[in-house]
Length: 374
Ligand code: SF4
Image (cartoon, rainbow, N blue to C red; front, side):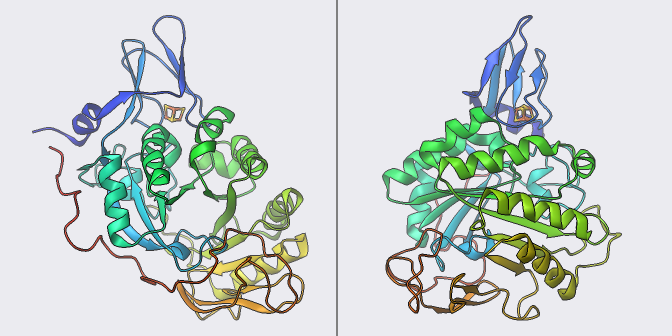
């Protein structure tokens, strides 16, 4: 019987983000590890591998598909209320003990992570997204940078059909992969996990490529939002939060920062769950650093009005939320404050079309993605 590794190794094509080295080695540029990969070996992510001096990369399947409110990604300044058709492949370049998508991200490292892949084509994914009423197609669940060639193939099809596109990513990028994605990506969410290189080493990465990616994404004009999962005892010290938020505010005070509550998951079950007062303390630190749009997540209704978008100039409430549910939407057609006229940073529809869903659901009706690979 074919193993998951066999299946994944058969659904590949030659990559575009690599160079050939001597002795049949290759160097991959899809993520900040920039692995030099010897003949016959995979990279750190386990899904890109060198066969005969050629780099093969994942192709033609998804590890999972789900329809999410865009607020779940989270994007709060990009088409509020839109449905985000979300797909992932398998694998990740980091190995966070608290991963909330570990079934897909760690599928090739952890025998407890079982997620049968489904055969897919870019056309079928886009057709299904449109059928569900999605406005945005998002590569997420596993780390999308390591499957960038597939994401770009899907995004080309999506943009031809009038959809927006986005990544939900750990931000461990390279200049090469960002240049490759630039023409095809509208929205980018980076999960900035800490501001300590030591913490990133524990997760299997380095902080340098992540900070560089955040700067580059802002400069290249993709709509960027940042999320930090606040883990008690890991990344919640005042000092780490102050340096992290000052870094973001120095790039732009307009970058929305989501600070979200941790709950015990995967292998990290020592820390306590994040409390509302922890989130509010972090939000205050971000505000003092100069950030204008700070949101607290995962504890709906327990954090005052910090789920809402307010005008940074006159403080009028513009979008009122409870969790992923949009209770009220008041931006003008031009994306401005109706009271003082200030332009609110983001990507806004000319009018609010309501919400198809305020919670995730599996694609309704018959989906073209039905074949389990074996
Ligand atoms: S995506 Fe990253 S981890 Fe995977 S082979 Fe390329 S450089 Fe290495």
